Length: 253
Picture 1 (cartoon, rainbow, N blue to C red):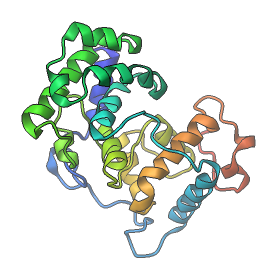
Picture 2 (picture 1 turned 60 degrees about the vertical axis):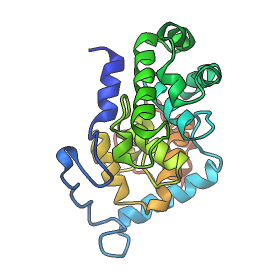
Picture 3 (picture 1 turned 135 degrees about the vertical axis):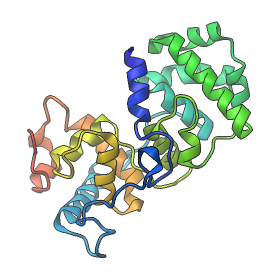
Picture 4 (picture 1 turned 120 degrees about the horizontal axis):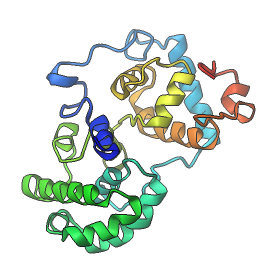
């Protein structure tokens, strides 16, 4: 199995279902009772989680989606391309890509060789090209070329898993959504919010601690902090506002 295929399957775990559903269509079980939806009052872990987000909002006031895009179609394509590479690298190829393929119909009809040439800087260009042509065909054939606004519809498209769907929902449509990437997962465990490594379980645990209005931008702030301060191998705890405020128990550090 290639790393690209593995990434696609990892993103699709928990796959084709709507918000609040688990694999097989069964409802996701209720989150921990510490969360804001449990008793009407925030427990101590949830209060600390909200304080963390408030602190990060000051440190990273401009945290946002770092994929350059203009509208839902471009964001969806860019997010699909971001598997196994960086947002910055994706941003180097998307201007030419969107000039050549400005909409779903053009993407579906794109010449594979031309598409592979445009995507070569990202690596695994053949698989990426196949994925984008399938995505364009799915959008054009089933949704009249319009990016759907529901998670269930989004994850039914080729190459789109729950994480990609959440990026689009939160950033293109303003629907509260939690994007659990490597940074969000790592920081959530270090902060003592979850012990899980499965993205869906991390998402569920985080949803129990934050009100929905924090979900989209809160994840951007965690990602920004993970990139700037709380690295995977060498977290700079001495420079961290969360450590200074005694908001981080530094689990596993």
